[in-house]
Image (cartoon, rainbow, N blue to C red; front, side, top):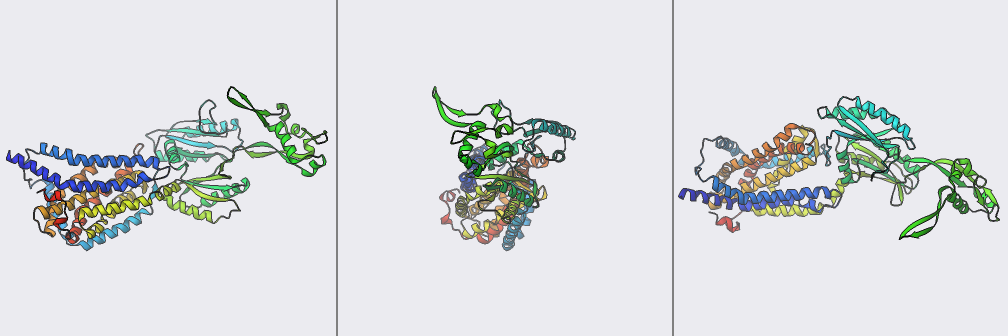
Length: 615
């Protein structure tokens, strides 16, 4: 019983020792993601639930570590020896590491230099990485936004689409392809399109080479002059559209009052940004046009008959297009009363020219005598934003960072001259990312200050707290290096991986420093190199165990590679693999060296009362 009581007391002392640093470390980790909850943009609907899930996971893990783990330790370790065996592999590894850590602990300046070099390396690696917060999901079902020139008939679209489907089905790796044109009449469809637009669905064999098959599909589209096709996956396109309001990575929106001018400027912008590295397949939004009857009143000829231009327009509109003259109320419903000419009056352009217009003296005159009547193309759908017409120039970004491409596009637009009341701006995913970050800059600054103060409350030294920030670039460096070595793409999964690495580093680092202080106060170990080396030796098994467990958890996802279904898990695993290695080395080497040099400024009376009574 005395031995069992001693084991229980040892478990209690360990819990009291780790309780305070565990609480502070968890608060620091929660503060790191708290600004996301104050984001004001479309992205908030996507990232806020992820932040809440992360906060919940950190909180629950802290409760498990403080309540469940001590209880299980007291129950399961009741019959284990009090003193650990020295011949175990982990103890031998700890002894070997101690011989390496000794010279490092005696060189704090070199550790500071290593942290500065790591920060510079992180900056150098961050810039060329492609940052794509919306991952490209490798779905086996591709969707092609298929569009022909305005006014293309259903028969012509059917012929070109059938030819495309035949070509697609001959591509190795394509299992099937089918299409729908226009909009189904009986479905509640959000796509208000004409028969010159449709969607082509392509099913890819899961065993086929995904990238090669997609490239072959894109090549097949280019074999149809006059047709436009954008290849994507349904989930990626809809997710990007929900987050940014636009399905494309880069969109340049041209505004103005003159449709001819904004069309010309849109084409000029398309030609300009097509030269920018990283821009892929820039397209000008097709303006849907249909034949329309255009009536231009000749004021001089109309005046001879005593007619005003407004009289001619109203009479023509009433016969050709219809004009609302009143309303009819029936059973709490309102119906417009419209005056409209007989259908046979609109059969051809000559019938319209022969329409009779009543003059002021009661006589009638043919429309062709007072106006020029012709058939001209007219936009059937007028897209506006505010009071201005607009046309979009859209493009995808590949092989370059989205931010760098967006900056180059903005510079290119500034070199284009626009007439008065005409302009252009860059929209799309990048603008949404910047807007989301701008909305939380203030909260990020406040969170950083609180995190610094909490770290100082644990480390008991302003100098050590400031220098401990060097551990951040050391931890991040491994993750960024892992990205650069693999595919060089920084995505949403990579961001989550960095969050996991930083959380692990904070908990390990705070726990290690708290153990140094515990040894000095409660066990009378004098401050110095011996104290630090003893603390590292005693905490080595727990630090290594947590790191190895994390690596074992993510290793399968990293080995499986970029396959369908792992678009978030794979980049997360890659970042964690690299980040855990460097963060563990930073925790066991850099932080002890800094503590041995700058951590002696705290005194016993500044420690928490609970730690004083833990012995």
